[in-house]
Image (cartoon, rainbow, N blue to C red; front, side, top):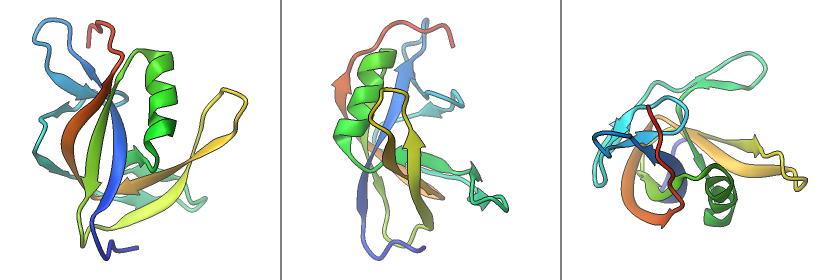
Amino acid sequence: MKASKDKTVYKLVVRTLFSKELVTSFQASLIHIGKEYYSDLISDNDGYISIGLHSFKKMEDADIMARGWGEIVVKCTIPKGAHYYAGEFLIIDGNGARKSYASDRIRYDEIVADYSIVRTC
């Protein structure tokens, strides 16, 4: 799909041990608040998004995961005109899947929750 307007979403990040910079939780990609990032957006034959910028639709869903993993929640924007897929993340907490997106563009707007613990990535 193509975003007809800006979409507010939420991403998890962590701080690096020595530099205290923000990096994405799974790929350890360096990010900066206020900047927009780009990615390929690739889906395999089973509908699984193998490449893209993954995010949560709802703050409360990102918050559950961030609390459990000691991470930071960043409010982000999938900009108007970006391509995206809507889907679900499975979270092992007994409450099932959570709504999510994978997009080809995202802007990191502001930290909205910080449960960070020191990581060595």
